[in-house]
Each structure stands twice: as C-alpha cells, then as structure tokens.
Amino acid sequence: MLKVTELHKEKGTNPIFIVDFSPPKSANINFLDESKKLNADYISVAYNPAKSIKVFSMIVAQEVKQISNKNVIFSLATRDMNKLSTQSILKGAQLLGLDNLIVFKGDKVTKKDIFKEVDDYTPTSLIKDIIKMNEGKDLNNHKIQPPSNFCVGAAINTSSNSNKEIKLTKNKLDSGAHFLISQPSSDPDNFLRFHSKYIKEFKKKINIPIFHGILMINKDSLYYDNISKSLSEKYNPKDSDGTIHTLKIIESFLEKGINSFYLIPPIYKNGLRDYKLANFVIDKIKNN
Image 1 (cartoon, rainbow, N blue to C red):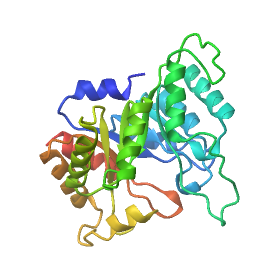
Image 2 (image 1 turned 180 degrees about the vertical axis):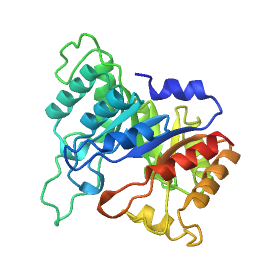
Image 3 (image 1 turned 90 degrees about the vertical axis):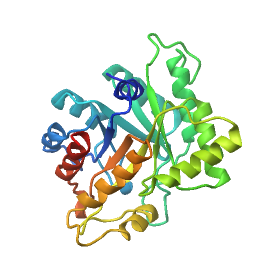
C-alpha cells in the first residue's frame, strides 16, 4: 500500500485530502458503498468516535481497501489497550498489508462511562515501539522477520501555542512519527503562529507532512468537543449545507501555501455522516 508520506511527496504543491470515515456500529456492510464513492486520497477509519462502540478500525480499513481499492489509514487509541494486545494488533495489520496508521490517546474516560482507561502506552511511547518494529524487533526484543513497514501519524493541536503542546509535538517527532494530523481549525494563521514558536524554541522547522483538520459544519451537524463547539459558533446559517464555509477555510489555507488536509465530513445524530458534501468540496478544490 502507498504510504501517506510517499503520496504527499508525489502530490507536491497539489491539494491532498485525508477524509475521516466512521466505522459501522454492526456487521452491516452498507458502509462499503459510501467508501467506494468517496473521492479521497486516503480514507482514515476512525477508532470508536466519541467513545461509541463501533467495528474495530483496522477491520473496517481492510474491508474498505479490499472492496473499494482505496488507500486507507486505521487508528489506534492508547487509552484502551495494553502493550501485548497493541502489538498483536500491529502484527495483524502487518499481515493484512495495512501500513498507514494514526496513534492518539483517545477521549478522557469519565464517571459516566462503563469502561476504564488502560493507558499502558502513551502515544509517544507507542510510536517509539512501532518504529522499533520497523527495525525488526518487537516489545520483547524478539526478531520480526520480515520487519514491519508502518507509516505512523500522530495528533497535535496547532491552535494551541502553549509550551506544553509545542514540546509534545517535538516529542512525537523525536519518537519517529512520519506525519501529523492537526486538530480542526478555521484559521491558517493559528498554525503559522504555532510553527513560528516551534522554530524559535527548537531552531528548526517541523520537517514531516502535517494534515490540517477541517471540520465541515452545517445547520444539522453536531459538535462533539470544545474545539468543534467553538468552530460551530462561526457557522453562517445562510450557508445551509456548510460547503461555502468549508471551501473558504480551505482556500485560506491554500493562499498561505498549505495544501494538506484532514477533512471531517458533517456529523449528524446517531453518528450519520455526509460524505457527498465532502466529495463536493474535494472536487471543487481539485478542479479549481
């Protein structure tokens, strides 16, 4: 499978889109029809979004790859698995030829939840062990033959200029992350300020691809955290399906020389998504 970093290099200055994709709640395979129609450079299968119980990201990614012949990314949350189960999953992904993945912690567990956090790994420590697997060694230092060939992404928040977020980003790069996914933002200047502070602190640029989160919002969509809530407050009700708003945001990034995006289609009640609107936006940008 083509690695995210390889396609990013091939695209050069042309826009590139990873599209967020929700796994189904059951074994109903209707979701495969939606994946076939999705005009994305990569389909990124989410991991239990909003702590809902869904089919495992890796399994869905494999089905999408086989049926739709699309480039895929699967996701892992360190919140839910110990080191043994995580490495077993990674070896399974290697067997299936799923080389692209995103590692993140996952939403914090609250008293209302019926499960507990595991947190045997942090995202940074898991990235380190994935790189170690690529070098031919597993958790117990046993030889892996052949070595894995993972291209691993990490999540960051470029809208935050805090020293903690800057340092956390540096740690993820030092751990070996191959690409980054930013939290959604509507203003490219947030990233430029973040990157400027990063350069000032560490005397060098972030030298791996960054895919900038773009949340699609319309009159019917829901917000799912504080970031999406703040972005939703900027929505213009006259833009009924939200595409005008989304296109303006992406165009503002392109004007600043930023061309890599993580597009999050509108999220509706019961976890429904609108991938047709995502396709419309992608087509408009790529054919502009």
